[in-house]
Image 1 (tube, rainbow, N blue to C red):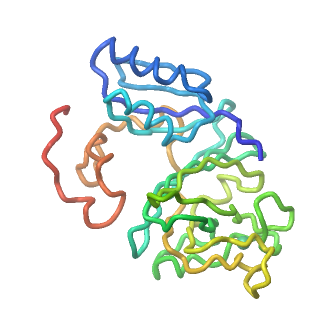
Image 2 (tube, rainbow, N blue to C red; image 1 turned 90 degrees about the vertical axis):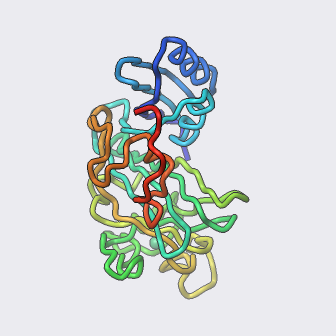
Length: 268
Ligand SMILES: [Zn+2]
């Protein structure tokens, strides 16, 4: 699948001097896959047009010794909408997956999920944004056209079928994929679920192959919610729990550790 379409990623980056700007620019500009870099020192803002994952760009910026927080994503065309799912479950699995509608036909899905067993895990948009019984109440794979389960590139597939993501030895799956059937406006309010096993893409012999891809139990899930496009998120402090933008980076996305106060950062 063509995954070379670029998106614009807006990061908040702690910068206090002109040399910081040069350091950030130079590390990004020499990286293949980065098309353009714009740094605004006064706003502590870095705008990167790239085909890399948000995690790759964040790691590059942070390799200069500064912290970076992704604040928004946008396409290169008109703003067609963006969404985000904060994925968590009963175990240690958690992550953030972003959806960005690049055009009427292409939806970019960029995410990082931690705490997985190494190897392939099925990833699907489910019909319902209902977590009242954890991931069990998310309903079936989102399937408005009443088709059989399949692979992302198949015409016979559920709209929600995103195939597999692969976790490395550290348990982290970081991915950037494009899909022709997912539309941001159709999936907001539904859920994203990552499964314990590999999705056989409808090609297995198991009874569940054409229903779920037989990808095992639901490990973690999150509701897909509308999110900020570029420059739509002016916040510096998260009013919800007092965690500042910079501190937020070190916190678990959900769960117990979220609200335990750390020592205050010296930068704010
Ligand atoms: Zn399916």
